[in-house]
Amino acid sequence: MNDVIHLLKTRRSTPPPMLAAPGPDEAQLETLLTIASRVPDHGKLSPWRFIVFAGEGRKRAGDIVAQVARADRPGMSAEQIEAERQRMTAAPLVVAVISTAKAHPKIPVSEQVSSASAACMNLLIAAQAMGFGASWLTNWFAFDRRALSLLGVNDDETVAGFIHIGSPTGALEDRPRPALADIVTRF
Image (cartoon, rainbow, N blue to C red; front, side, top):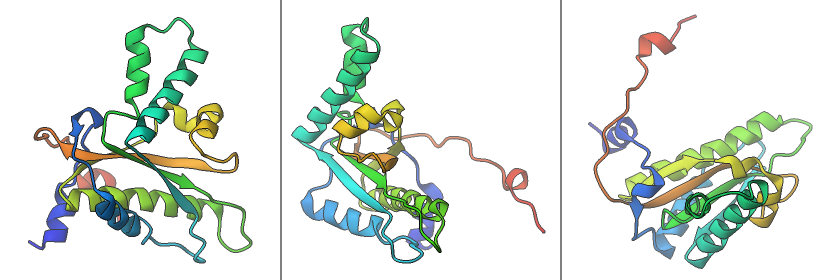
């Protein structure tokens, strides 16, 4: 079987707590982002951008997530606050794929958002092809304007996904996949 076909047939998300160092180095990250940007893009609008959270940036982002969560739930325990912080610090690298979709006379916003989603998928596949594990998540703060503003997302932008990338710490069992008979119809 072709290596690309095998990769696509066996792709599996790795939960962030199972992603450890090392993560991608700068050259690998540049390759990952280049691949992420090679997606269908009707009109050449590039309706996405990337925010890279690595090193201290992950810690600052985790502090922001914990701070906003604590503001909404002042009675949070220390363990709950730390769990919120870990949403951005569990993996050695987090790449936010930001949808910059805007009204256009010929290209619907939905197509532009789909292009940002395709960037997320390319990033996941490329990470696995490089031997890393990855997971595409959003979490509550992807929809919280206070948190997004503090994380560098503009008011007219949305998060397509936070892609967590690192070295898998163990083997994962595959989850059940839908039977094609249940999801395919022919016209």
